[in-house]
Length: 178
Image (cartoon, rainbow, N blue to C red; front, side, top):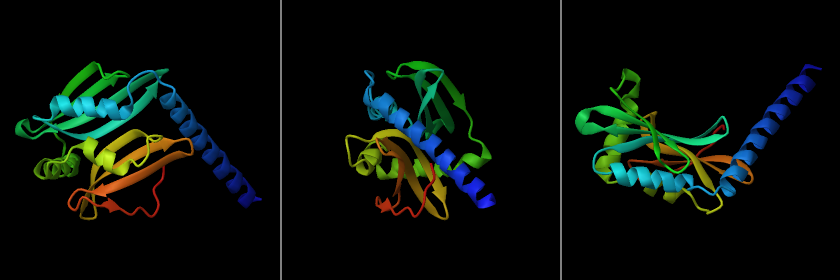
């Protein structure tokens, strides 16, 4: 009996996740506003001489599409946090000093800058289809590997891909959750 309850619970959670991914894809596919990749490019082009994007995230809140973008500005040793509307217009801007647990993002931003990488270049390298939409990208460091992980959505659901910042090669992902 317990196995059936557990199996039903897992199927239910999986179907909710799949429905959310499908709704996200449909919303992006039929949107009349800029694509997430276009917003990423707009932000990166504006800040390219002064900061590196360390996190990019699409959000749907209260029926509105917004983007949260975090950049690291090395020369001022601070993060710039942007909240943008669906067209990439600024809603909110904050500056924050790095906290102790954010040293991985700073190290990754340093590699990005030294290698001349941009997040849009790495996302383009990972995105092999025009029918995929970027919903999140983030610089990470784990087990001695510094990488960017990006989450895409298509008609079949969400999937993640990663690229090693040191080598520039795609990382094999054994199992990534949503």
